[in-house]
Image 1 (tube, rainbow, N blue to C red):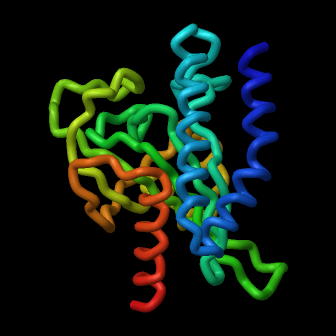
Image 2: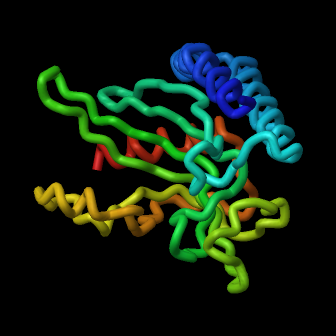
Length: 210
């Protein structure tokens, strides 16, 4: 199917994006940043075009959707960042209308010297807060007119309780619920993927030194 072909293509692209992201962050060459951003934009346009012809779904609630794609992995000290881009602004929580729409996600793993110790992972998002009350929670497309305040925040899980050791809590929970802890306001204009990642890295360095 087209969806399988696209998913395989995205999987094939990931090592290249990882290498490019690593180079971009380790070598101060402006043209690499521009190249990385152009590739991200072209890939997003391809997925949007496929969606416009009903060849695939961008709705993350659907099991075979292609709602997001990985655009690279890099390391910041003992932190490993994996960056994901949502094809369209997507509700922060699929079943609750929070007025927040996520555009990017960073999986931030805290690596340990002890290889036997499991890495801890935090999730950060680039979100736009839409202040118009008529938006529906399942409205995951058609956000070209989305206006609001852009920010970076952290996923703070509420249900299931992240401190619970009861496996049944996780099995019985169909969709996890979480709050959005705003950490950095970015203004009314959507930042590029590269600029948003730069902002998060600076934020993480600040949090590490506090």
